[in-house]
Length: 197
Ligand SMILES: [Zn+2]
Image 1 (cartoon, protein in one colour):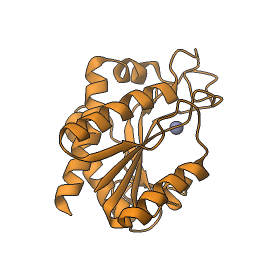
Image 2 (cartoon, helix red, strand yellow):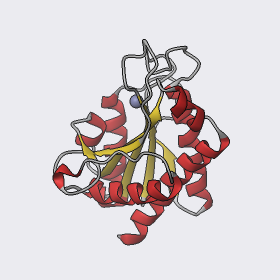
Image 3 (cartoon, protein in one colour):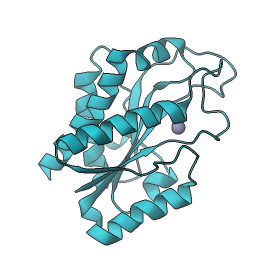
Image 4 (cartoon, helix red, strand yellow):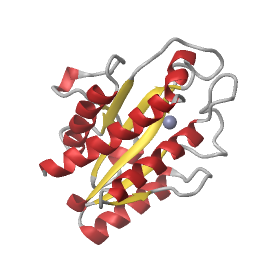
């Protein structure tokens, strides 16, 4: 199994930061993505960063990279997790939003089992925190038409880890405890998903 970890956006992406500009989504998600990849590599997995660059890589190119791995290994031997930080508004003011959630593409796909494993790991590592669920289709993940989920051939999931326009959420995300929890939930969710296959 080749594990691809995507990090949202780039140093040059407008917005995607806290209202005071101190927190940048591209920077935080790269920090977490690098930690997740290293932890998976320590455990012997073939884990790679999809976007090692600091600049934003267009979705079309990210999809091309993912599907290149799928063609090389077979789509059942590739998985993708895209790591993001949510926003409640447009970055012009602070909100009180909190919570973790994961998205998959619409309908039942391999990504839904991956999302289930990530949700189970989030429940363990984010104990006492809000886990945002949408059971309208019978499973906890949210469904969307995000290009990175819809156009990629393999199991794919996008996580939204807290809110970049909530001071309360950022205090946790930027704490040592928060960073470890966010990293560990991804590592554990991915490992548990693979072990069930
Ligand atoms: Zn994002």
